[in-house]
Length: 597
Picture 1: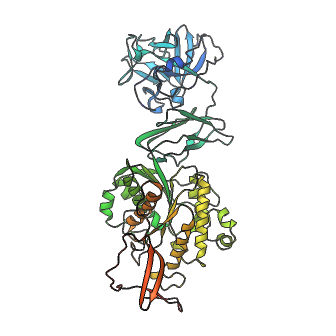
Picture 2: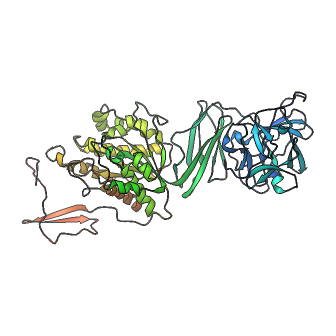
Picture 3: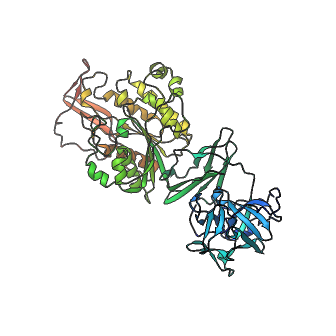
């Protein structure tokens, strides 16, 4: 809740022993006011507690619609009162009890503490006492407006630039308050949580509804207030305690926002530094998960990306956020991540120590820096080294095709990573997917199986996320010199053909990295061109003005004597070397299936 100026009312409740004890009286229930709106007091229900012991739950608000509540949603004695947009939390609701005449006690329903006036003119919450400092005179002025005076000091609750203090009453607008009746029989929750996928520092997808979900007690009412939307959104938990609601789509916004989620009783969950932009899920195996920094003991001794020290020092992009999901596998699909990571802002410290995916970082950086207004970009990295594509596919997808069912259904813990690291992401609104995988599948025979399984996996993921034909961009594996003598692999040449055939699936694209490799290092240092070429595909297809993104592709060749003329498409920028003979090249032998240099 914003700590704007500080408000009034909060109060101290509890009926004195000498007072008449009546059953709680239900005040007229108004529409919960959450939008700063001049005239909000006139739209409220007013304070309608006529008899000693009458009790009701109210918002305390000013004429701009700002509501009083406990600053920081805390439960400590001597904590102050804040005034801000209504977020539906128990810490912005007050149990007001009539003591007779104009006197009342006011208790915060979140903390259970009383509103108290101090001798030095401050307004705080405190545990119950018999002091007049916890008794308030709420005097009706006209219509639905009131002034609130401390019985002990006679001073009025007054909003000031520094918060809410007590001052002599002079009739200033900052001393005028209203009360809006709320339901007083709302179920009290004993537990409340929001999905671990949603955190401070996250990016949420622009131009799509934003799902917020979690767990609480069955039947509990949940309120969600997004800082970028004036409305308050509510949901009621089902019989299992699951709740979910949607915040309407919003345009890109690079200004830090808040998201507050609450149920009646537990402390609210508040997320800060939330940006609105594009969210990409980046998946695959080790070359997707590899960080920017050197890893002497991991990935066979990865030496970091090219010029890693300078690259890490320059990785200062506050509008790029990354969550790296920790490795997990499961036999059945999980609704929630069993081992979530943390949303982190892109800066040199995090880039050096948080195992930022290098490929995902370079992808996000090019998207961010190439778009108008530097759109925020969030990447969710769900990648595990030395894994097979069948581990990232659902059991249903593998089983529904006779070919993949017979070959993959019982192999390599099929579907385990899908169950634990993809299925759990399904509620996220996203822009699309990037995929860097295949090294573990290069020995599959026939190699066409990979084409089939990759196509089916793309369809499977799109169906799971239920957001239409989400773009899917993948990396074609580069040559690997140690494999040239393996007739099943030919330096990955046959596998690259299987990957290329995946492009027949709608809204897919393949980043060619044939020229960026270390021929004898499967974990090469050239992650920058990989990430950037994936980004070029996205920029060309999803972000407006088209950019060159597709490499030259072989179309045909004609042999005439000792000369071969090769025709390419997408050949802009392709040049020859002055018709000089190639320095070296490989010839594929048809008879013995060997590559000859």
